[in-house]
Length: 296
Image (cartoon, rainbow, N blue to C red; front, side, top):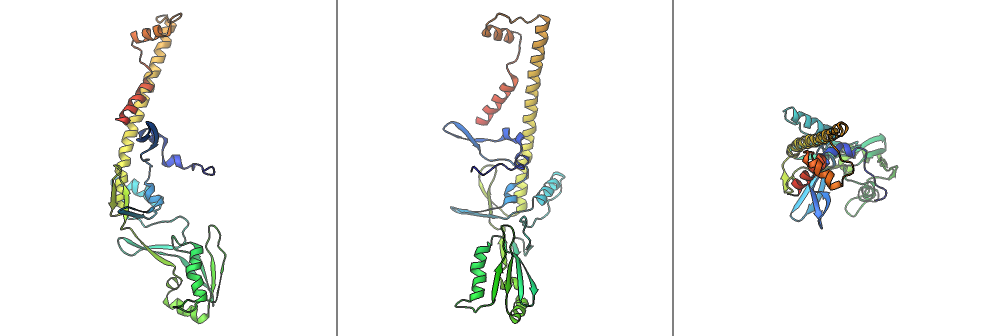
């Protein structure tokens, strides 16, 4: 944890003015983390989700934040959001819809010579080491069920780039091209959106039928948060204005000689201010009222 830090973008996504709206958990009567945050865009669609628990599982693909923002603006204008296709940053392959709930994810492979192909992208979720061990090695050495297909391969992978150079017989290359290189080199996978489960604003697990349903649910929660944020900011500004008015009145009455507090005990000074209808610190009082509402 000592090597982690908050991203500079975090406070743009989780705005500081929303902090006061968050309901917090309590542990041993100590206020701890919020029950949930309210980002300005649905981060579950940006980062995706993949997990399994007792009686439930979820698999939510990643989506392009720019498309999400565009759809939120459309909804603000009263228009219907556009359908979205899964998106993964820096992924150079293709993601194609093949039905309402199914997508084909393809890596990148190209012929670079009469007996060579170059693999420059793997399907989402496929790691270079596992791909080498489960696909390229069996194709090189053969298995009990299938003979060798390639004669050699070299890897030039980095931490951000995939690059395999595969050598094979010319006739075999023609055969694989005819049947499809993506299929032969297992560079296609599928993903579905039939198991998109998530907690709603009431912390109830729900199954969502489409990504747009998640977007609409988020939109409702976010608009409500904006209404509450506006009310909170109006309240704090009114409290600050009242505090400044009390301070200005105090200064004027002191300068005019109407208010005398010299050589008085603190409790007597407070009693005098109360008698003159001065407010206690309006900002502190208002914040305490908000905290009581949260506890209730």
